[in-house]
Every structure is written in C-alpha cells, then in structure tokens.
Length: 506
Image (cartoon, rainbow, N blue to C red; front, top):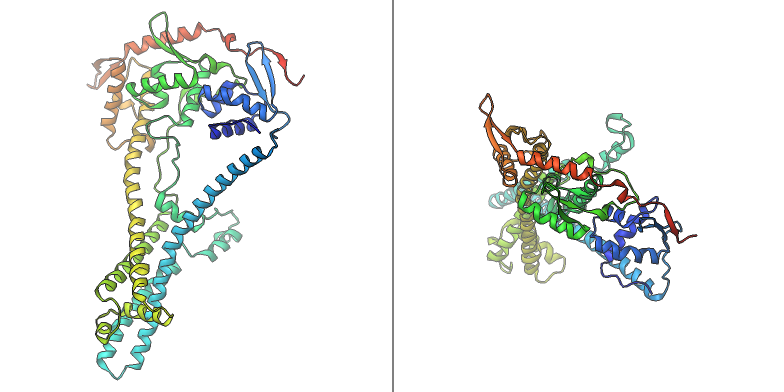
C-alpha cells in the first residue's frame, strides 16, 4: 500500500536529500538543505523513514536524528504501490518526451521549410536553364528565361552561402577538431549542442539561472538565509535580512514574516527594545558546518538571451527570414493568381509559383492551390512570425528583468556596506565593479539604496572637506551593539543535540 502523500514533489525532494547524506540528519538539517517549510518537513520525514526503514536515534535534547544505513528500498511492494511508482515514472517520462518532441518539431519546421524552399528554388533554376536553352531562337522567351534564371541562381547562391558556410553544417570540422584538436592541438574540444536544443535556446532561452519566482525568495536564497541564521545563534535582524535578500524595508518585513511562518521563527524584543527574529528550531541540527558565506550572500546572475554563439543566432534569423519571404510570396501568389487553369493564368503567374504548381501537379496532386496557399504560405508565414516575435518579447522582458537583478544586487552590496560601518557612509561607496551590480543609472540607484535604508533608520547628513554628503546611521549602530549583546546572551548548549539515548537499531 503506502502513504497517500499530497505533496509528492516535496516527498521526493526530502528522499533525495536523505540519499545524499553521509550521516544522520535532523528535521532542521533537512529544512536547511531543501528550504521546504518546517511543517511540511515535519509531516513528511517520518513517512520517508517508515517507507525506507530508516534508523531513528533520539538525542538527549529530544530531537530525532534520521539515517538510512540499509539503503532506500521501499517496504511497500504491493500492486498499488507498484502502480503508483509506475504512474509517477511514466508521467515524468511523458513530460520529458513531450518537451523533446516539441523542440524537435520547432527544428523540423525551421530547417524543414528552409530545405523545401531551397529545393523549390533549385528546381526553378534547373527548369529555367532548360527553358532558356530550348528557346534560344525566341528573344522574348529567352528574356523571360534569363530573368527566371537570374532570380533562381541568386537564390541558389544564397543556399550555398548559408548551407556550406554557416555554423550549422561544420560537422566534418567538428569531427576533426574533436579527434585531433584544431591545428593539430591535442586539447579537448567542447561538446557541441544538438541543433534542436540550439534552436530552442534561441526561441525560448535558458532556465532562470537564479531559480524561483520573481518577487519571492527562491529556494537557493532561503537556503542561504537559513545557513546565516544557523551560523548566528538562530537570530537575525531586519537589516541583516535586507542585506542577504536585497529587499527594501517594506518588502523585507513582509518576507521575514513569511519566513517565520515557514521555518518556525518568532519576533522578540531585546532589553534595549531592538526587534530580532529567533529561529530556535533551526539550530537543532546534526550538521554543524557554517554554510553562510561569512554573511556575504552570493549575487544573482544576469539572464542570458541564449547560450548559443551570436553568429549561430544570426543564421537562425536569416533562415527564418528566408522562410518568411517564401511564405509571404506563395500566399500572395495563391491569393492573386489562384489555380493555373488557362494560358492567361499561366502568363500572369510568377515564375517560381509556376514551377511549384507544375511540380505538385506532376506528383499527382489534383488541387495544388490549397497546398501552396496553406502548406507553403500560411503555415511557414505564421511560424516564421512567431519564431521572431517570441524571442523579441523575451528579449525586452530579459532587459527589464536584468535591470531589476542589478538593482537587487546593488542593494545587497549597499546594505552590507551600510551595516558594516553605519556611522560614515558615502553614496559613491555603494557600488561594485561587477556588471551584475551596475544598473543603467548607477547614481540614481545609489541614492535609492540610501533612501531605502533611511526609511528604516533616519540618518544624519553632513559634508566632508570635498563637499560630499556623509550619512551617519546612528540608530543602526545602536542596533548592531544590541544585537551582538543579545546573541552573546544565548546559551550555545541550548541547541546541542546531546548524546544518543535511544537507537532503533539496538
């Protein structure tokens, strides 16, 4: 049988986390590594321990340390358990296959239509040359044939340039490079991405390098926050929370309240009246390592438009542009000329349209017009339009998103600078040389950071010898002193697990 778990994804996440553990782990350890809410971990960990026959060690503090010395073989072997696992694996496999099919479909549409249009152009070239040769005694016909020949030869010349000199067809060079290294070098060559992945990257981009949902703390940020709390006696202040998350005061207060709900925290007031947030339950851990980066939260990375080389994306645009031109051409001629039934229709039709209509007729298609209008007109035209529209919209969104990331990173740097020495702060000191921390208008962003911290703690402003404003956050200095005093008064033994008083394997 087995448990009926509503949050199957969280259950699997906890199981995978236990599989990576070399030793036992407590609830606090699993929360720190998964960033799942405390109540969710409390509910699911006993289920994981029961299903995989985990070992339970109760310490003197009353905390349970879970380990799995016998491996992860489920004790549920019945039909329902097997069906559930099969369904989960099948659903996961179906999502993977569907994603792969979608990527391949985009590649087939882009490259397939390009090849079809190039074959049509090549056929037009051959027929034009044949017609020109057989009609050399007729000047007017020869002129028409030479016109079609020139058009078709131009298209064919474009085929040669795109096909043989683009980044898409250097398979022989890549093979030689991978075997011998370029110019005889034996250095290992980087693995090339499949074409369908490169096309998908151009259209839809890559996964968010920072994870999470815009406006909310990501799982990685929560893990960094928990690590900082665990390294600082389970206590954090709002300014520290701001410098770790890059959130301004108003948003930071909302976010830290949500974290208290998720991870069992609570606000308290020190003897001096300073508000601190305590997370005592996060200290009951077996893994005592400090993973807090010394209080310097890693910066977020900027989003990239694509992982492809710039030249490859240019060629994708060129190929799509050719498909767009041909699709528009065939749709226009299908609507303006229609079926070629009489000599008048034949004379009015453009050359490549005639050739295409003739080839479809030779292939046994009685009504070529719908295929030309829809198959060679509407479908490639709409696809090519969307193929450009989606990346264009994504590029605009990416630019705005990166500006927000730069400002958030600048906040982390600025808040940390202010918190480190709050009595002497200058606007120009709130910066970093990294591009991830430099918004488009750096001066305005620096002032914004100072004003945001000033909304939490009003500074005194003076001028130095050069006339530069110097900000002094006296209340922040007092808060730092009170926070250090509060942490010093916490008994470190209170979070100790103590010796094992019960072992389920003994």
